Image (cartoon, rainbow, N blue to C red; front, top):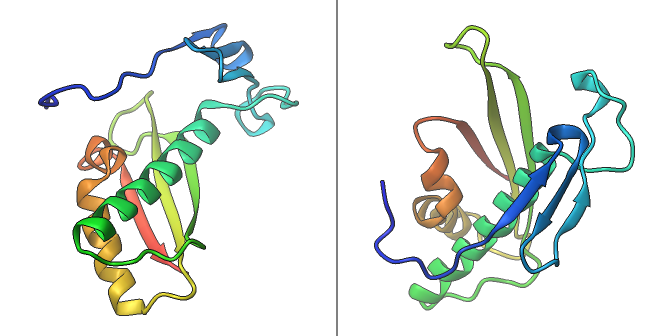
Length: 144
């Protein structure tokens, strides 16, 4: 599926795979990459693709919540936070391949639960990460 019109394009270059670096074209993102011990690596002070995906999905989903709130003329409290777990492991249906699954814990303590549930459901339809993963990655949304 294509987008109608690009509003913004992010560009980043990774070198060295899971034990290298990743840098954005504007230099704002410049990180060392390390393979977690759980995946047979040395661990260390770098980040990894799963952490970057978790951070990106969390931030993007909050953006979707803000967009839906604005469209519905609803105020989204400022204390919204999302903790996202991105797990990697052998793919259940493709021998020799790997897959990911996502578990998002969404917190907006001062918001009515029914209203928050509705907002989260709508944001899941709007969020580009949700649309990119739908049908391919198991995504669990939990309100905490």
